[in-house]
Amino acid sequence: MLRVGMLTSGGDCQALNAAMRGVAKGLSSNVEELEIYGFLDGYKGLIYGNYRLLSSSDFSGILTKGGTILGSSRQPFKLMRTPDANGLDKVEAMKQNYYKLNLDCIVILGGNGTQKTANLLREEGLNVIHLPKTIDNDIFGTDVTFGFQSAINIATDAIDCIHTTAASHNRVFIVEVMGHKVGWLTLYAGMAGGADIILLPEIPYDIKKVVAAIEHRTKAGKGFTILAVAEGAISKEDAKLSKKEYKKKQEKSPYPSVSYEIAAEIGKKLGSEVRVTVPGHTQRGGSPTPYDRVLCTRLGAEGAKAILEKDFGHMIAMVNNEVRRVPLENVAGKLKTVDPNAQIVKEAKLTGISFGD
Image 1 (tube, one colour):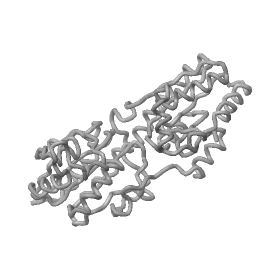
Image 2 (tube, rainbow, N blue to C red):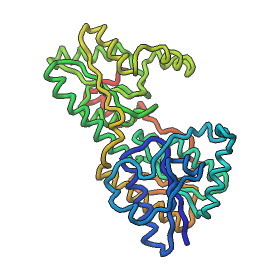
Image 3 (spheres, helix red, strand yellow):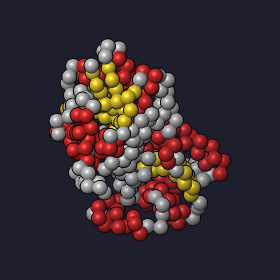
Image 4 (tube, rainbow, N blue to C red):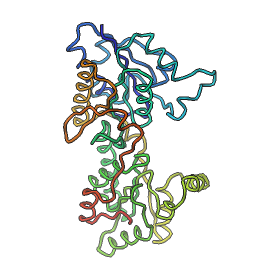
């Protein structure tokens, strides 16, 4: 009998179900006796023993279904060693629930924080397989994470929709794109959506150069300008501040996000109205794209193969379009950011896109 646990942790995305289905099908097609236990609401389920035995019907019809059938929650890695309100040792509780079910392995789907906890459990002696999920595409060691392409489609669609109203009113529009501390999603969606200016956390912007780029378009007879702004975008002045100083400044800011601050500065310098659109969590919703469905099926199948071969302690990654097993200890805690000198950035600049630098 093969017994496998499964959980989805952190923010949701469109392809979590597809990835779990890939693992389940990869196992069930090769093992006669199999039990898969789904822990509910992420690590919370593993900590407090909330789980259910999943059947083949649970994995049927979920390839195209967004979200996660197991539910999710955020359990910060930095608090994993801190007892809960009742004094419960969370790490020890997770280990006991793992052993209680006599699991051979636990498959953990999630982003950076999830991965760090997965590596912690590996260090504690549990057999772990990690599948890299995040719309941010910021997990080190894999070329792409599942959820990224689906989010690109939604963010791009938002920029596409803004084009018509921006052209109709000859206005400056800002579309704020998710991505936490990195700019992958904004870069790809901005290029795909034909944004004129793309502002990323990795390339601090100069508001004067942003305004100059808008004025250049106006002089060229372009009546509107569209900016794709990452939620973590930062000015050159703010980039010089310490993390503590910058956090304090944000707390005192009258603006709900950096996009509104940029809009106010542009409006002040140009004397014109600037509108902000925030697609927000729609970028995590809906059905996964065909690309993500294929990606998750491949990652899930390789995850199943690793379990069958008893080769644990790995993240299942995509490297040069091939599925690879990457040791968790080599990647946990590392962030994959956009290189300001990357070829894709240089190519974007060649087409006239401004990065405000």
